[in-house]
Length: 201
Image (cartoon, rainbow, N blue to C red; front, side, top):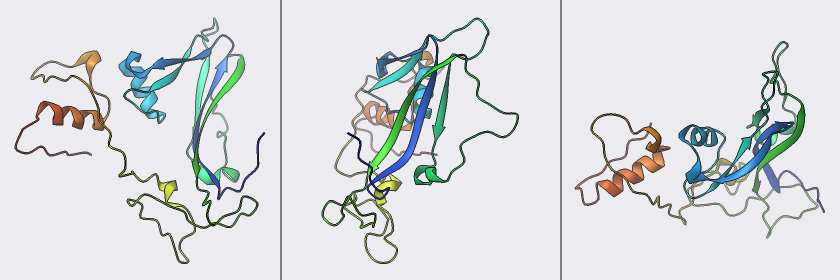
């Protein structure tokens, strides 16, 4: 069953959630089957791209013209215990006939198994990727560098796709999604070029 642990052991980084109205349901689909607008919506919610799957909402249409589902997100991290979650007077997210809730928590394991105990809440920093700039010893080592989502150097991401260039018009439904795919496409198309420089901003 569920076991209560200190926040220094399992950190609630953020969450996304979708409230479903009567008739709405979640369906898992391959990333490749999403339309460009659906991909953009998934990326805005923090979903990964390329080769993964995504959960989309289907149904929920109703005769009164109100939304059949609503997305709720929270990036408060560990401050969730004292953070206000609500709306100013006069504002709301409406949904017709709420019936269910789908929650996507993003938890980070910060449990240092060599130097911490599940029954105690004191924190001792554990291993972090070498890209992490967080202190791991001394008086400033009060949190895990994993909370800053440092990029690991142990995994190389390879985007596999077929790409071409256009000198006029638009790409339409085949447009690239995100900077990482754009840079990977440039490297693939310009393979053998003397110099390929990435500018991201």
